[in-house]
Image (cartoon, rainbow, N blue to C red; front, side):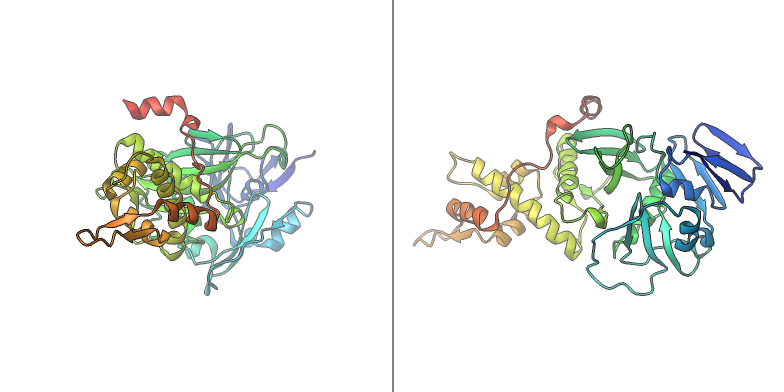
Length: 362
């Protein structure tokens, strides 16, 4: 396929493997780049980090408009995602985003500088790495169609800032965007087997962030599965990874609080399955403390109590001399049937990269 010749309004352009100075044109082979990566070559200034993750430094609003993109790439497919926002967002400076070949609506305003995207933008084309490149960071987990990459916010500062700004388009209460050096980011990537050509790399579809040093032992600061991939149970993978990291570190923890309403709903489902599995695993014990359950789940005791109340499996002995709280295992089994809960662990310890386990064991 013939490459596109793109006009670049910049005195400096860097693409994987080669740097150009004072150029006005550059030819791009579309078979090696995602649509949005090609479009970024039309922008006023782009760069590629040492990990070859393309990031936008300065955007041209006109070139990002959907009409201009359609004019440049009339044959490029854009599939609309079937995702709905929890609330109707107003005063959005960015109306839609394009990630890969998926077009979907934003939910909330973000803090992109006005000089970057203008006062109103119909479509923001989210940069990704070249198809021949892997996501940034270290591959720490891989299981079936999904993988997790750990990204150091200090080592990949620009990427992490862009990711945080992008996430704000779908999160109401996210507050960290630029001071990312004290965080690690864990990218959830889907390894497509049919939709992309052979040799193509995974598509990032979500992430969570985690403070490198949390005085509250928080194992997760922010979590998001991008809207087109929500309601597929993928949030459980991210939550499961966060608790496995706590276990590897030898520290019982939980997510940063307060949780949003959607976050609380997601965590309760995750915690319920985790607690139920632990309870049914205590086969020869008639008496359990909350701390024992918490230790078995690597959960905070207060999160265990919240979960047990939500499951409605608590009762009292109601004897003359004993009114202590008890858990009825029959009610737990009934709850599993009624709620159709799958107790299979979302994360398999065997999926962690061996070198990563060795690093954390040292």
